[in-house]
Length: 314
Image (cartoon, rainbow, N blue to C red):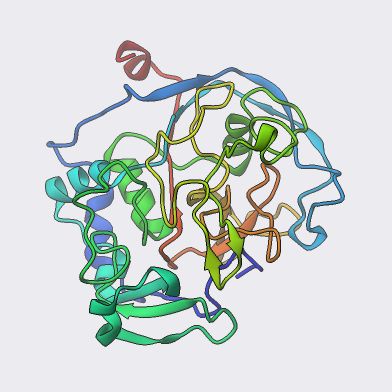
């Protein structure tokens, strides 16, 4: 994988995914919900950056004009409640559930779950393997989503996200679609609100506050994921495109725009991002994650193409 923001060095994978393939076709009980999507107009936008803050190895630049057709995108990341409806309708099992464990940030593991620890990631020791960690138990088996149904679902692989998207009559965004929507009409800015991270000392996103990885002050209000409607929306009406959770894109990762590889592009950064380690919560920033990998800081949002069914439901 790439040198992604705070991602564990090891890759969790499930080799046999055949049990979930049939779920890629939406069952009759699927609910097509387009009510919380926003329209992104057709036309060009400036993608990438020439800013010195960019990581050359990530191929953030050069800045270039990209032309896109009109499309619609979820105003927030998919929530725990959204995903639970999908699972209830399909009996879908995520790759983390099939494997039986996942990586959780060390600072979020409770004493009750210390007996379930597998070990630390070798190069990123703030990540700890925990038996029983999955989307229903994001910080370990004693944790629950009951009180965080409005938070983004995590411990989701690309295939998990794609299965949800297809069930809901949508798809995962291309990297260009994600970045255009995230910019909210702002050309060339570092963040969806401008170039200053905390204008007037106001927090605009959920990232690590304090000294990474030893101390998170939570000054922005959150130590882990935040509700999907936290902070102000961008110019198009999207929430939390900087920080909170990384979001899957449909593109295969490369540093020269080749459409092949073993990893997918992720965008947006997460609650673990900190300038001392990486600043990939910038809009142009990009990194990779193995397609069948999953962690406690990766989620997704969906897009839909312009069509009669969609327009008739809005």
